[in-house]
Image (tube, rainbow, N blue to C red):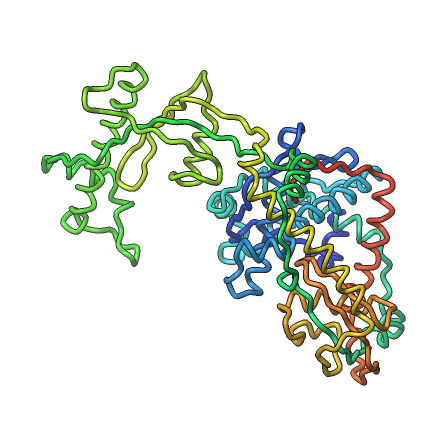
Length: 488
């Protein structure tokens, strides 16, 4: 199978780099709390394969970063919701799980040797052109990943790619000629963009309460944690010359300037004093921690109290996650450094999630009501007006002209044109993931003269799309899909 991997590396490039982009250098983005029903850490199950909440968060983070690049770093959570990134993230994981079920049924695997071959070929882990095991571990650690997590993800990506490749045929020459016309079609259209903002609604209390009663399980509080904590502020010490010299001798290899040159004792003096002060502060924080555990805090030391959730916390995400691991048997967290201070946290009480009262959920209920009601009204408006509307006339457009649709972002424009060229209707309307609806009328159609449109990559992309669509539909009928996550 190593031979197969090497022979067909060009088909693996996309999958490999999807995985690399997903994990190496991509910031983590979350979207808040959702209810996961009674299935603990799983958000869905597809056949024999469970999808975890961590995988869903990572999938969403990857999508967010990809869209954010298109928006030149200006994408926010509100826009992400409009584009339906949450649904897309879950859909991607479901599709992957369907293919993994198929691979499992045929006994396909990615061996350790195959996996190592691919990992060693990735530039992110290469030093002077060669794979470096230490660099590999360091890069993953910097991106908050363990080697096990990364390799499990890579194994899945490669297994999916192998499965799809085995289902695909190899000769492209005839196919390129056959689909040149299809890819070279251009349409001149008249269109109008309908947005939810065009719909004006004023919900009444009865409608809102009815919606809440019907779907109250979707409106839940986040788990919260009542905590108390004490802080150890920085201590200044007066180290002796011998103590300063001893520290320098023990740590001189780490005391370097910007060019990597080791600092002299005189040059490192300020840094050494700061390090010794921090060491003394940490030592005092440990004493405070012991006193806190014993209930023997000195008079004048009064713990502060607060309540935190995963999405609402005064602490860093890392410290917040640590606090969430505390329990009645282990309520104390050892000193953790925040800035120049050290903090010791005690869990007073855990508050599990619960269904919100109507008043607590009202803001969310209104948002859900407005979104669904506007969607329905927008569909009705499109249905009633697509045959008679007056809109904007375009130049001739191909499926690659997503940036030329006025009123739509480039991703929306690409989505619209993809669906338009897949439609057989001269007139109609198309609903986008963002919720916008475009009503259109194809005025004229022509074939382009550029025969290069149907190159090898285009053929592979089109074949892959058609294969995926048919395959996914077939697999959905074979492997049951259970979705536990609510609110997406």
